[in-house]
Structures are given as C-alpha cells and as structure tokens.
Length: 104
Image (cartoon, rainbow, N blue to C red):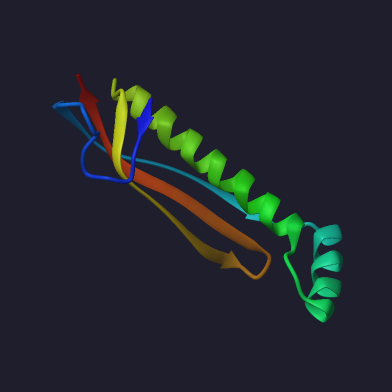
C-alpha cells in the first residue's frame, strides 16, 4: 500500500478513485507514565513514555486506515492527514484519514 500526504503519487497515474478511508484509536494514559510525566515537568525534557504511546497510536490508526482502503480494493491512499483530540482528561483519539485510490 502506497501512503502519501500529497494529492497524487509521484510517477503513478490514478486510474480509479475509491473514496474516503479512515482509521482511529483512542489511547489512555498509564498511571506509571503519569508519575514519570509529572516528575519530568519539574526538570523538563521529553516525556518518552508519552512519545512512545503516541507513536504506537499513530501506527494503529494508519494501519486501520490501510485495512479500510484494502476493503475498497485500493492500492494507495493519497492526501493522508493525522489528527488528535482529547476525548477525556486521560485519553486521546488519533485519527488517520485520506482518499483511497487505485494507481498504475
């Protein structure tokens, strides 16, 4: 599966538009990560536990978007975007979306 943020795939011709596809996940904080994060806010720096959590969430959302595109018999997804939002105080949603296409 080709996944790009552009409206086209370089060197490929779009032969069929398959439509909107998306994938999402909601990740909650872990109490151990919260303790570490609170300590890190005192001294500053990257909160690696949250960075890893968000990287995993993005990969899940992209993977689910890719699966959605496969159900439409697409071999590429163009105009891909990622967004995040707070669902509640301790959880965030990551959504990946784009346009499924068939390219040559």
